[in-house]
Image (cartoon, rainbow, N blue to C red; front, side, top):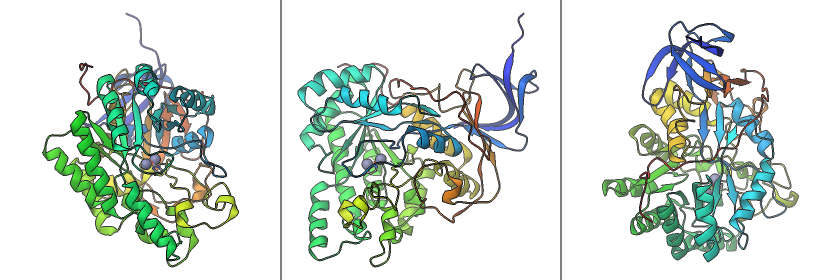
Amino acid sequence: MSRTVLDLVVRNALVSTAADTFACDIGIRGGVVTMLGRDLPGAATEIDARGRHVTPGGVDGHCHLDQPMPPPVRMADGFDSGTRSAACGGTTTVIPFAAQEKGQSLRAAVDDYHRRAGSKAHVDYAFHLIVTDPSPHVLRDELPALIAEGYTSFKIYMTYDDLKLDDRQILDVLDVARRYRAMPMIHAENSECIAWLADRLIGAGNVAPRYHAVSRPMLVEREATHRAITLSELVDVPILIVHVSGREAVEQIRWARSRGLRILAETCPQYLFLTSADLGIDDDYRGAKCVCSPPPRDEANQKIIWDGLSDGLFTVFSSDHAPFSFDDPAGKMPGGREVAFPHIPNGIPGLETRLPLLFSEGVLAGRISINRFVELTSTAPARTYGLHPRKGTIAIGSDADLVVWDEREVVVSNELLHHAVDYTPYEGRRLRAWPALTLLRGEVVWDGRQFSPGSGGRFLRCGTPSILPASEAR
Ligand code: DUC
Ligand code: ZN
Ligand code: ZN
């Protein structure tokens, strides 16, 4: 009998998956978990995890890296700094977006995005698509071909003039998702209501960042969420509503689920840890740091989002990392000036803080179990986007992507982080844990103090999203 040779053993781990928690050693060979058990044979490298929780590497199913923006705006993070930051925060797989410009071929957008990624990624990565121009060629040829090649999820916007689709176009795209078994992700806000409110606010001279939240009240999210659900029901295809911010959208999703509809939902740290007060008082332009869409709500809504995380309403917990520096003519001050709220680039950074925030304030504060934490941050995104069981779990045959947790007080500060953004919205927040180690396919990429590039991230082709039947008539 040939002896199993292990490259690495993580000993005495308290392993949590989405299903169980158990104590064992983790044996790794060739970047893959090959043994789980007690007293595993010795290996060239050994890590002692005694007394530590070990969870699967995070899968961030919604982040933006080097996504082309209208000049002069540019994202601060590309694949190098963004994935370095991900690794240091315990995330080993990211899924950013290859965005089609109107008039552009979807294939060209994907090719361009591969060029942007180059060989820069430090964690594994897949692409979602963003469909902004569903021409007959895109619907008939490009989208089905790209789905077959492993781009099995795409985002549709119901707002933003340069991105949004009308209802008819959304129906056409959802129909392709149904026939070719892809996962549509929907940004649900009512565009006309936002534009009408924004025009009135600007007309009255109310231009400060905080009016961003006034121009996007919860009812615009509620209406669009309801409409997205209706379109999904009409086509008979599951959808995932991204970045759900509060009560009104949550109620629509609960209503849809009660009718047996397959509506998945995502929320993000900003809806747990920020409120509209973070968009500033009076004319304070620093509020631009927290301008994102939908905007953060209030404390009562934070509680509703926590409830949805613990009771199963939410499928996934993503960062929606959209990295724009504050003091930057390519960022929150386009052209070097303070601008009226509709012109502030939308989005906040959060790749590195996503897991520590939820582990600390969710698991260690007793709001969710560690198994639910794993489900929301790793297993469910891997399943939803067709990467499970290679990603999203600790099991024999899975990639050895692991996080070893250190339970100690950490005060979040931008200096601790590894992104290229000049701020974090969570500056000064006290957390109870941080990753002590991140392993990507068995290589230590973060040791609690330092990032090590390792042999780099790999591009992943996604399979069929797990909620969809294995085969469905076209
Ligand atoms: N939607 C996102 O998903 N990210 C950033 C901005 C936005 O509107
Ligand atoms: Zn969005
Ligand atoms: Zn986003």
